[in-house]
Length: 301
Image 1 (cartoon, rainbow, N blue to C red):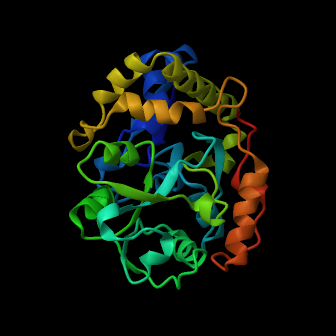
Image 2: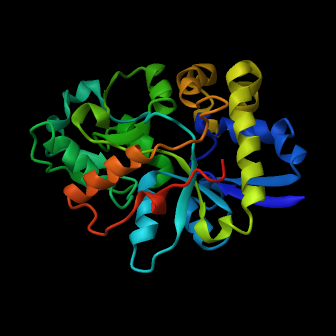
């Protein structure tokens, strides 16, 4: 068996359902693969998924496009590259409690934002506020990553970045009401999140193995679309206790249309990434010249 490890970007949630279904249904085994799935709860997010790939702990990382750009442009560059996307559409949003009287991004001036401390994140949030005629003068805190959602519910922070197909589903069922600010609604051309990323230098010697991994993973995601009850029953056994109240069928209903189909699953559009690269350069969030071909590649699909 060819052994592979994928480092998830978060504890098991709806974005990961295809990996778990591929493993459960034997799709990886059918292609002579033994896949180990690890998540940040195992080390309390001491190492990011991308760092685990750089250190050789994992073969693949789930991460946003920004992480790939960051690793390509850091002082000691590492050739991380996106080889597939999980969601064809950006399902993320900035969330605030309705009771906070924050009705639009410019109302975030002077408020507290709970950050994941990603390289471009804070700058993106400030630009979001500016694009709504605000000043971008937001206060930023950096809590424990796995506890960031709790800072909004507890009132420790006023806003954070979430996936609407996960925390958004949880929020809908809570006793609170929320406002959501999607980046595309405020002229920010955000890119793919999450990507399956790998060490580019490992692709050529392991291309067939990587292609097999993506093929089996695609089967897992497409299976979850046709068998939602079976798939969410499996996921229910894997999500942490703090997420057991989330309506997984609803989360899958929101997510499934964005998984793509037999022909489109995983494929990344170069213009989507180029627009984001142009935007972060324009806003001076990144100064390096970097090509789309350094960030994504569809060759393993």
